[in-house]
Length: 364
Ligand code: F0G
Image 1: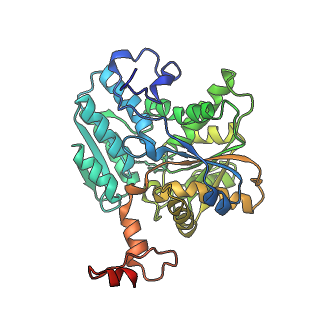
Image 2 (image 1 turned 180 degrees about the horizontal axis):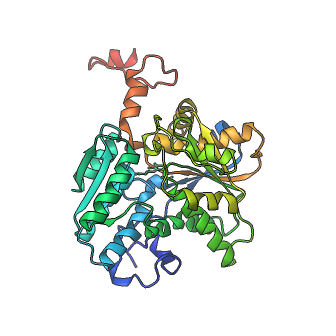
Image 3 (image 1 turned 45 degrees about the horizontal axis):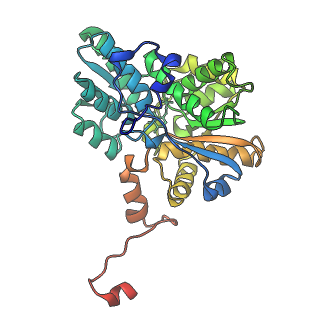
């Protein structure tokens, strides 16, 4: 129908929340592109690399896919308020969907550690915003206690409906590939909700006979926030929280909530968990940005991860790989100003040039 857009989440309604019907709260969202970019592929060393750009969602990150389903469930259960802890993207999505549903939204974010674009969105969409003096892990603990005691509907990815929505990243990607599954799906990992969702989606796609071969999931963590990668190295025999620090504030998480479900996803897909340094993240981001695609720092971890696995021989140049870009370049304008205008030592800086308003100055 002209003027009516079909949601890339709700066209999979029967696989995520059958019968949601009237309660559906949708922008719509999803229907994100799968892109091939020569420069990015040359950087990664992989000819068959495709970028699934989730920054094309309405609030600029993949979180919209989980939030449309989570908010719909909040509507169905008559919730009087919704809440989440966030490094910024979940809060932006919650604020937007809660506004649409007409339910008050409450977000808990680590004070001083949320990228500017995300904070701006959260405030603009009207969520009550609590700047918690602590990290994301402290925010998550607090929101769980507060929602239990105050009767607020919790919309972090420990809420299974969030995971249901995020499964559609995989369904949609497989459909775009005409159900010819890639060899690897590579994604940045923080709280591990998305890794868990990808594992569940692949399990279900295989059970339904939509795919015959299961791609290997590669979860990429920032080296300074890598408890899941540490666990992977010892076969997930132990679990140790860390004090997280990384330039990729979206994944600055030391004690991920969806650990067990993510372990299952890695095991079932013969997956891998690796780390990339902040320098590797920035190197990848610079190339993704300069290719005209752009993404926020955490998203670039996926391409940095592909490059590393090509160099170590795990991924072959001819393999078919999908790297998920989880958030839009405008999510974190602060890092761009820092890299291109403020930091004297940044070799790839594209410095703006201030001039007098004369043609001579332009020519110079
Ligand atoms: N990429 C981006 C841009 C994110 O915002 C997040 C998580 C991730 C990757 C990692 O996904 O947590 O499912 O492993 N952001 C959450 C938030 C924590 O609050 O916005 P994950």
